[in-house]
Picture 1 (cartoon, one colour):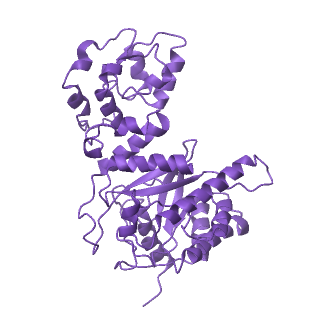
Picture 2 (spheres, helix red, strand yellow):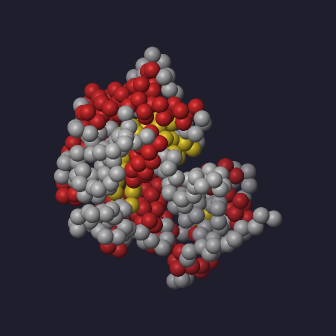
Picture 3 (cartoon, one colour):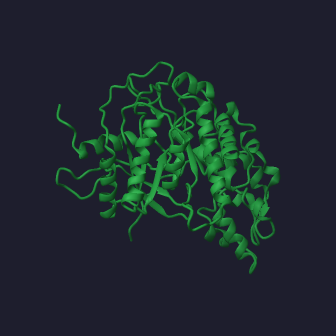
Length: 412
């Protein structure tokens, strides 16, 4: 069999990397111009997008070093027993691809993960060689996100952390028993130990202060990914796990990846994928805990069967269940109360707080700082507006939760 070209390897290993959500890529319709018609393509390039803490969008070359794997995790398309096309980059090929894409201005960085080759130590050593070559041999200044392999020698992970902007360790599933059942070679205790060691090293680096002679250690922190819908864990269980991970390991982000059924898999896995909206609702609930001051108990309490409603966002569901706390006066309420109003985001609330230093806000003023007045109107009092009995209407929930009708935009 002829050896694969680097382009063929890229096609296999960028496609294999799409299941890893932890660099925040998003799917889109497949379009390509290979037949000579049109221009541009949305497939096969291996380029995804991540967001820096300051909001900048960063294009990353997102690939696996290899999709060969000695582990046999039931939910993974790259498991050892899976009948998929295999490929493997050499370290030099990954470095050459990264530099080549960077010089063409296609990317601003690299996201590199891998199947487990021989052992966690050997895999981590190969990933580290890529980062070391980019940073030390080629003085690469772009963004690098590496997977830290649980169980690998801590010395290797620490050196990887001195080259990478971010490291991530996948927690895999929300319940330890599910990990042990579906991924028998992976040990939850080992995963947590790797995450704990990373947290300790990150905090140690922060304590040393901004010494210009000290190489930074994972300045963008660590993150993790959890598969949703591969086991019977409820949304309440998943959010409880996330709260524990944020609190115990200082994670920057927990990513939720909806389970995708794969061919020839075990009957222990569901035959259909969960609704993508479930993943979206989990991200919204996660956001409420991290940026809006909600406690886990406030979101999880009262969930039917422990599941977030799919037809409305979690903040609206919470507000409808706590109508006695509304309406909120936008000219007098503190920031924490305003953040609880459906339809008002962090930026909208900050704009309201700044604007009301100079004037009394009317409903028209709110329309200028939020995306839509419809979900806001029943829950606020403004200079010229009071919702009256609107909050008491039993049909308020279905009215606000109705799906938006698609409207054709006009160019003129």
